[in-house]
Length: 375
Image 1 (cartoon, rainbow, N blue to C red):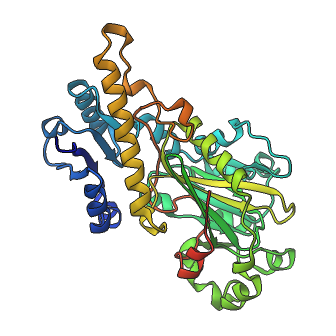
Image 2 (spheres, rainbow, N blue to C red; image 1 turned 90 degrees about the vertical axis):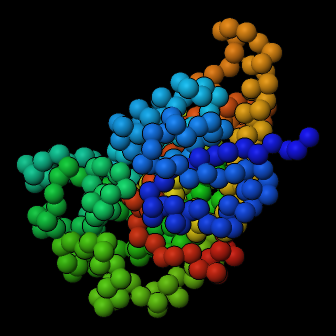
Image 3 (cartoon, rainbow, N blue to C red; image 1 turned 60 degrees about the vertical axis):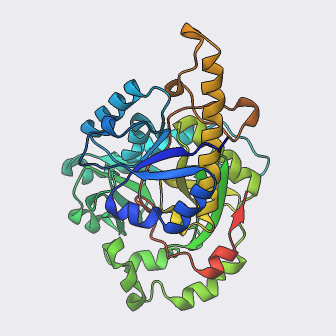
């Protein structure tokens, strides 16, 4: 009897589709029994079944309704991921609240988030008492993180004069010196990969006094002209020598976030607080990031798809042997492959194309790929 081919339908914006659905991924997945099928957004989703799984990164009430209708007709379909779970990452406050809810203890390392506040109107923006707990410089980010061009417009604000150019609602997040290095942690089910990338350089008290009021992140490429950031800075910084966070520490945070958010595909940005060598701050979480930039992403995603389909078969087989309310519903379970003794299936995951709320970083170079760690 021929081995069964599982069909995974993908619904992605054209830009995301071009970067993620590479021939190398499609070929490897098919060789492992996974057929990646493009969902036609010009046709009703419910007419394009059956599918074993739907992989998506689309938003809106109409799409959510279509997923619900498909689930009614094909109750065993796995949806990666739940629109409600993804929605939490569209607000930069609720996005990081989950970090504060994690209960993870390590002997030497600690973690948290930077100080931040929400500014809903201009009056609050210029009311210094409303946010006197924050120190300059601060990073100004749109409150909404939905992947739109507007949500990417961020700025580094050095003093009160820079506030004049900001348009609420925004989040003001305290900029923490971190040695010009950011750690990007990719999560694919139980798989966790941490890589180090270049970030904004530290801001000294002296530079803070002479800096211009506001610097848009779109201007980062021009920073060398102002002698704030250039190749000399990074050569002195010795990126290659930067110590990675402990494997177990990053893994525990990744798995904790996965459980708390009910998401399987995401990345998060971590910086090491320069004031404390063992203090780490999570500054951003992204749903369904640019995995094609991750080394060997084809094998990682294919393994994940195979695990999901294997678990689905187990649940379907179990349901065939049961009747009535004892049947397991996929929509009520989360895929926790990382805890093999607790393996359970579901329809959930995470959010964001690229680096929507993090500090600007450089593309992953060959050297940086070699410096990445897998945990």
